[in-house]
Length: 219
Length: 128
Image (tube, rainbow over all chains, first blue to last red; front, side, top):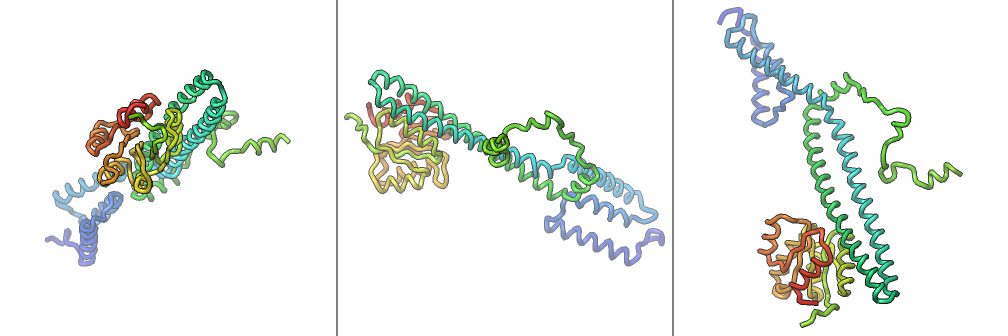
């Protein structure tokens, strides 16, 4: 080996340590994709002043791979998966839960009203009672919808939770990158202004003002 | 033999609204002796404690599903001949096949109407 390409003992030891660490991570299945880019950078430091053609080709490939990983990390960070996990999915599941609760509550109200009607029907002459009973039966049948929509909504909530778990994996893997991106790219989301800011739709239980609160404002 | 409108019927569903709807529909069909359970294991306990003439059960419940309840019923020497109607949103062919294989007496897909309930009950317990 020529003097130009020979490594010092300290450099060899450092490289050996790096390769041993890499092997240990591979053996322990503990090598994360976000660490690859750094590893490439570290390995490239060991290329001598006059690398062989094979070394150049290898490190060229490694450099390209490192670039691809860096780009991928940046693109994933720019999607802000932390927002998806922290805000969008929880909000969506809360809204869906609220739909189920609201329709269940409304269905019980309808059933209560039907009970009253049935009691009333029992005081009517048979022909009139039959008309009321027939109508209440149709209402009971129609109330089936609540069970079906509830089950469908539950399926959607489960799907969202599953997406949330996967997004959480991304946030864990690319947490540093996301934090860097978030710091460098503060939100430019245009907040609605004026009357547009007042269009927020129904509020979840306990989030908005109650009628009592509103009445108090008028007294 | 005429069906006794006072026959005890056990309805099983983890959804209280659905229990109420089925109970009211049965009441309009003149059946008044109705007991409720909110999952398979509660239903099985009630079936072993008191006599019933018909079970109307949902499928998708926890911890014991309607299918598991059906299998338990069919495996129990005292309950094995119990008329058992499944009322469920599970509408895949394989569900119906599985329920039939397990010995279900009839199968109603939600949403259903009183006419369907009455028709299936007639095929299972006789005319009324």
